[in-house]
Amino acid sequence: MDTINGHQVIVMQRLVRGRVHTALEVSATSADINPDQVNQGFNDILRLVQLGLLADLSNWPQFSQMAKTEASETGAEVVVVRPTRLGEIMFTKVKWDKWKN
Image 1 (tube, helix red, strand yellow):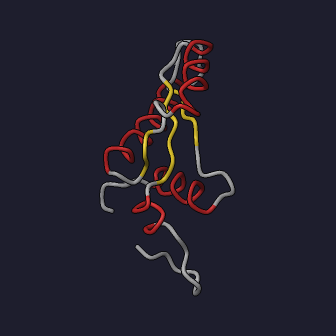
Image 2 (spheres, rainbow, N blue to C red):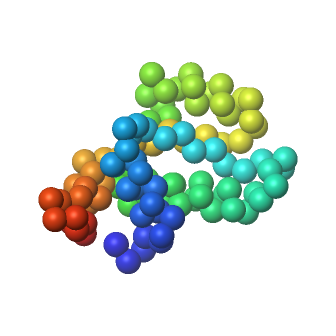
Image 3 (cartoon, rainbow, N blue to C red):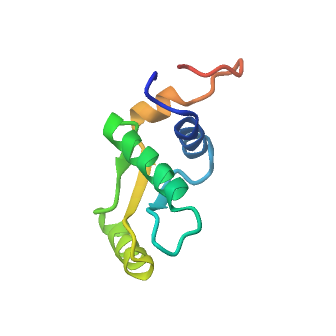
């Protein structure tokens, strides 16, 4: 938990607690106004995948066509992610409004 920054915590909370548990994240292109900020968010997502809190679904049959289409339209790297069971357990709220972690 010490290696997770504030943005990563917010992303995990939104994915675990929200109605939609799958997210498509796009890296920055040369046309973006703040490419460093966009790439920071993309790298945060990739770090959560490395830690095992998110699963990369980019090659799954139901998401592969969407990822390829988005990558060809934007010219950027695309990753489709979903929280793993470990990520769901760590970022689920308990009854008394405290986080398990």
